[in-house]
Amino acid sequence: MTDDFYNRWLAQRRQELPPSTLPDEIMKRVGELEQHRQATRWLRLIQRVEHSRVSRWAVCGGALVVGSLPFLFLAYVARFVNF
Image 1 (cartoon, rainbow, N blue to C red):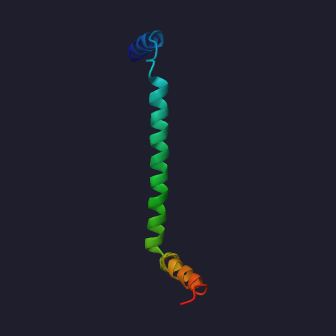
Image 2 (image 1 turned 180 degrees about the horizontal axis):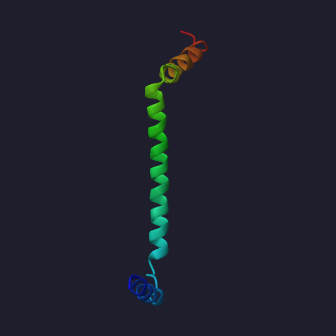
Image 3 (image 1 turned 90 degrees about the vertical axis):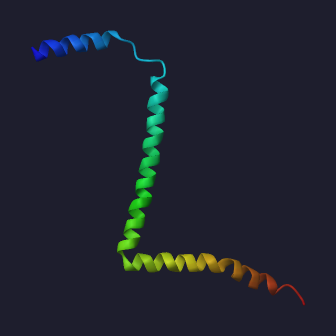
């Protein structure tokens, strides 16, 4: 009985045409999936940084270097300026 019901349902579904917006919906879902994967990568990276002392030190050191770049640039430029 279940097989008969399923076969009728399957035959009915095969006769129907897919909606014209189906490719757009599929591509939209693919784009959402890619955004979700990227967010998951960032989350995993943050979790690794939280759990590892060495990676925390590395992140802080990198932030210190990036933060000091403007001052290093100004010190370099100040050598060429006569007061």
